Length: 300
Image 1 (cartoon, one colour):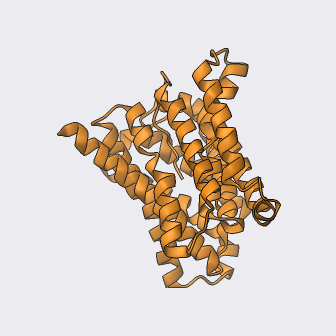
Image 2 (image 1 turned 90 degrees about the horizontal axis):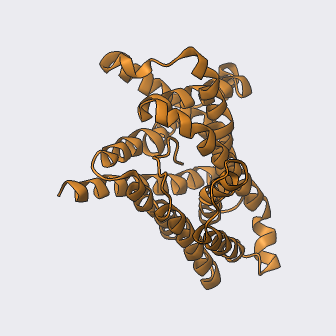
Image 3 (image 1 turned 60 degrees about the vertical axis):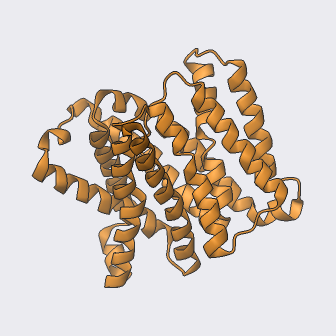
């Protein structure tokens, strides 16, 4: 029973991450700036986590000073970078294309590990790479010049998001081995939040004149895309293995695509659906055969 409860928690987290993608697409359709969404979601979550741990468990905020630059690097290049390009991909294209391309990050991590960390590039990894490549070709509509042209900017942003998310996973893995996942999450969010303060300083945000309702929207996005799903995800990890949790979290792109279809009149051809299935199958194959599955500290 304990194991089943774990799957329920992980599924809840994945579903919230998927729904959040559709919600932000709705906000972009209603003239919200992706930059303010990206900035406020991490900043509000970071402040909430810091305040919570100050009141409940200050030990989770203790890190070695020499690791601070590492947290900042992961926060800026990983969280801020992947979030920015992922959300702009959603704005310029659609949820399905953006999330599928960004989800190919594990394939890039596997290639990096084979090239620079001397990990064996197994036949299953090679097959997963071929499957993902074919899946991407079909999912983005590359077989149809019209479809590809209309989504080209979003496709480029999503591919950059995948690269930055892969960098994040490579650089962030040592931190999750050394620190509690909540500690790692809090500090990488802090790194991203401080970075955004320089890019879009508080004075600029104040001059934008966001209403109380706008701030409720920003807080809601932060809650459903970071605070609540992470709580569910880590509860699930207490009951099932990380590798199984990662596979269960594959629900995220499925929920995102379905919710876009239901609420935003999303459209994909049969070939694009088949391509999406190939991409998800490739990622699942890679995770199943991974002997080093660790929980991510920054899902989308």
